[in-house]
Length: 329
Image (cartoon, one colour):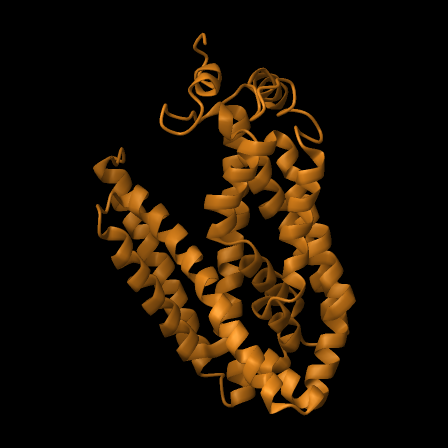
């Protein structure tokens, strides 16, 4: 049920309309500066550090993190889930810029490759490798994209109380809007929109993290309250600890969510378009700071989810749930 008042909902619609107008305006603005295929695909290989870093970060941290991972891992590992965000910042953002950023830019520029499949074709002189890589990208990006759109549709559905079929309409609207500004301005439009969205993400995460702690009387009080709650194994004092109830599995999550970005085509593509080596170095710093705030903040906030949410009788073991909800077993 939607608890928003009429005035609040109207204000939300106005903000959303402004956001849509800005995205379309960016598409129109960049369309006038898109003169060739190279401009459309890679922004003329002249994209600066700020746009590249924010584009990398907003592609990395999407609805999958905000609506799924942060809450899921925060529930399991408590405040130690913050390590996932720190790992994403260092392993998933900082290292790739220095390790593969320069090499990728130089090689793709040298052979004139605009996409990952085209790179494989020209680098190894293999049409079959191009076809195979294109199929892999196409097939496996479908569930990824679907999860992003599904997450956003659920968010919009809750905020605007859209009903049973509302999510479908939101998915269609988002797909159409994305197609409009991408077709108008290509990669530069995407990068500019990512920059704008990145600013919103930074402000939003900082605000929500602050409110999450404030509502529980500060950080120390929130951690103390978290330590009283039993983890999934029934142990107390772990959810507020530095390394959580299961450090080994937590390490696996850090690596899983950080190393994968090194080979994702939508991430590596950012290095194809970056302007020069100086922009790569500067972009590495900006991207890492962005990840610390957005990913670190998301997982940190997710670590306190048990202070705000409780399971129902149908969600798992009854005895555990009664303990979690503060009732005698």
